Amino acid sequence: MSADLIHLVQHLGQPDVLVVGDVMLDRYIFGDAERISQEAPVVLLRADRREERLGGASSVATMLRALGARTALAGVVGADADAARIRRLLTDLNIDHDCVLVDANRPSTVKERYIGRAQARHPQQMLRVDFEVRDPLDAAIEERMKQAVESRIRRADVLLISDYDKGVCTPGLLQHVIGLARSLGRRVLVDPIRCKPGQGDSSFAKYRGCSSMTPNRLEAGLAVGKTLATIDDALSAADELRQRLDMEAGIVTLDKDGMALAHRDGRRKHFPTRPRQVYDITGAGDMVLCVLGMALAAGADYDAAIRLANVAGGLEVEKLGVAPVTRDEILRDLRHGMLAERESRPGSKIVDRATLVQEIEALRCGGKRIGFTNGCFDLLHAGHVQYLQEAKAQADILIVGLNSDAGVRSLKGPERPINPEAARAEVLAALACVDYVTLFDEPTPLELIRLIRPDVLIKGADYRKDQVVGADFVESYGGKVYLAPLKAGFSTTALAERLAESRPRRVA
View 1 (spheres, rainbow, N blue to C red):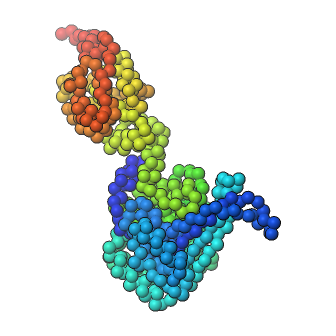
View 2 (view 1 turned 30 degrees about the vertical axis):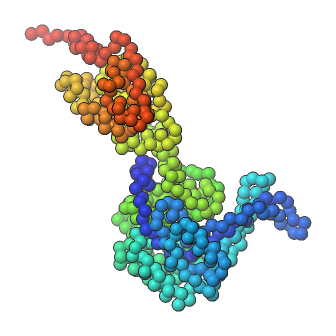
């Protein structure tokens, strides 16, 4: 269910995350693709806007900051104007870049994308131009990187490696930091480079000893030398890579099919994801890495971390380019999914207290007005139906707090209830005017009312407002108390007495 993921997002905290990898600048040039040039058979782009964003490992850092993590970045830039721009962006985002070193022998990596709009709408990427050097770091810079990471990793809760094959993630550097992280009890998660054709998993050897990595279907297939055509193929590949690289968990990302997990404890599970309107896949892998890292740092199990990463990665592909996803966006999506889940499952109106609070929060965020009433509802009759319909008319969502069997006995005596709580809840849930039914054992529903904080508290007109439990509390935050009219001539107690009188008497 989405409720546990909502709880996870709300308790992610502010983990300290160290990102090691290839620092980049993404530059976007937007314009209208108006016509074909007279000089050559190419589209002419009339540019009207330029935008710069952090890319590569620095994009991972940006995403982490948007999700609320304390973030440090380790990498290399050139001695150039683009490096100065990268540092300004990092400073503006409050990303620690003390471990971003200068290598005067290489330029800062820049990816320049040209985005054209057809008829002033429908922007599409037309061309990408890369300014980069892919040579591995020289020995002196590599040694400085080791020292920089070593000085910072002790403060980190988790280490993320974002390898774009631009030369920073050398085998020597990675084996040093992975070994250090393991000795400190820190998890290391890797977004790997693609294996070179014919090299099997040798390209992945530099990640040996990491906690987990997130190759996509193609990358994992190249690593194990197989085409991953089915979910079982992906699970087998995840397990094979886990064993070869001495990982805690092998993960294979499967785009629209979600993710496959093979854990050291023997778990082999597929985590599907719901269909999305894919706008741009750029950045989805980075987002998955970020959310996995944050969730694991917050104490989540791999199952929950992967499910949450599926959601965040899905939101990322709905955006143009690499654009951060926030916790609020994830929560809105989870709440929407939770309500869809509820509508699709039988008996979903009957919920426990924790689920009720989560779902009501989602409904309230969607602008729904919440009403609450309570009672024993032992023998449901026409008076109850009219009362509940009147209660529902006061709000968009009506919650019924139902006295448990123990609660009814304490109120009505040992002969009640006539119908057990499960049966009473099922009958109430069958009414169209009732949206939720939840049980409570306490003598009054005050604790439940305090949890739900209804917009309208409804009780029968046979009560005065000063007799309604929770009335003062609801009115204290601007809520309303409504006394609903009752249908004359109907009473559960009187009905129960008539039933008792109608039973045949035993003849002595």
